[in-house]
Length: 87
Image (tube, rainbow, N blue to C red; front, side, top):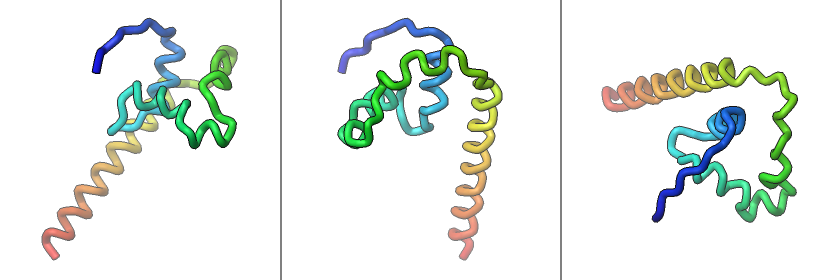
């Protein structure tokens, strides 16, 4: 698989990052927009182009909230795993 660098605005990067999950790459996030499921539901990347231009979304706050959620989730998983191992 080839790697290609592209330039995107910081706003676009933050948008993609807000959709990205820990086990996915940015390529995975972008490709999900063209998946069959999204085609059937009417979702597409085109719908989102420019959609955030005038939004008042605080991406830094959202990113911190997502990061905290992921850390909390990982902690809960570890505790559950530890509990199961002791049982």
